[in-house]
Length: 439
Ligand code: HEM
Image (cartoon, rainbow, N blue to C red; front, side, top):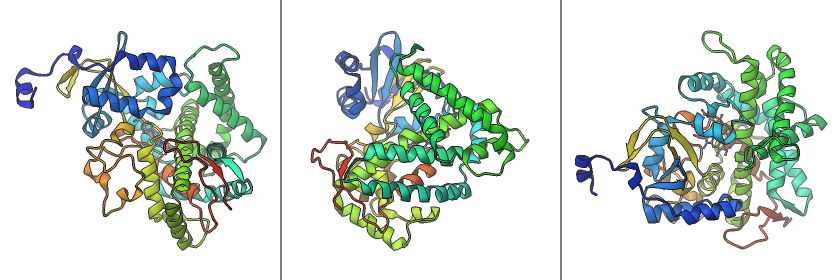
């Protein structure tokens, strides 16, 4: 139906929205890992066969995929205040990471975001980078000792150590190892399909990890409130609204644990994908090395990381190809119409950065690794404000994106020394991030 006809007849009923094939659901149930590894192909198939509004057959539960940058803009901006982030994210991770910033809506979300912003201002980011610098140097020096190593594991260890130091202000040592383990159990539990608190199960380990972490952090709050340190924990303890309101102990713990989770997997994934692509594209590795060498010293200031133009394009291209949050869910709180269809309240609507980032209508050769598409001369992402959305957008736009950019560019940067590595695998879809040193 064309738009003029649609304007006369109004949106069509929900039941007429094209449905994705039931076989997809069966395949997902039989092979849950399959879709986690390749989320893009099923989404592309749905878009090609059904269009930009697609219903998922999920029994009585209403779930829709909305495709394209306009849909991303509408959902993420939520100008009418009818899309809840709290509801879907609480269902997904609320038992392990309750009351985090993303699990809040409306005024409650706004006031907490304002308070938390104090731990993400530019001068604070500068001081985080100062803490990061020596950790990255010693981490990379350690990687260089090994002739064979898997980037993902090494990067994960590095980002966990950074989180302990920058987020919590805790020195590295046996305590950090225990905390890291508790935290990893929590992250694993938040993805568990079997969410039963039975000893021995992954989910139970996550709940126990949460208890241990909560105890540890709560005990530290009085010291952090009284001190003058500049780690994220201390800053949240001292953050104050214009009227002097502060976060309660429980709120501090909930926000801190959520922040660590929001930062951890995303940065680990981005950084290992950057190393992976740099290893596969030696010409880009060389460009990046030349730029970093021009800075002239391994320990960079925050502003200097922003000047690494080629590395910034590599990071953007990696976030386009492999966005750590491939899909973003919301739940509608009111009926509304989109794409010519009625969408009732209590429906889950999902937009997909990973799909939007590969739409041939918007990107030139979307499956090609081409960081220069982000150069000012070509900037393809300027064609639509919501066509490059690895950090989301609107009121829930990633609070830590500047931190993430500084952390990943700083850590993937080879500096004046050589960055060892050549991906031993030539398969185009290989994401093993396993490297053999060439030095
Ligand atoms: C490359 C790394 C990262 C990526 C790709 C990423 C991506 C995202 C995305 C897509 C969202 C929005 C989710 C939604 O709208 O439902 C989000 C929210 C958020 N992220 Fe990040 N993130 C990254 C790193 C970080 C870091 C390092 C931190 C903290 C230090 C952080 C803290 C947050 C917080 C607090 C929110 C919730 C914001 C709100 O609800 O107002 N993220 N992130």
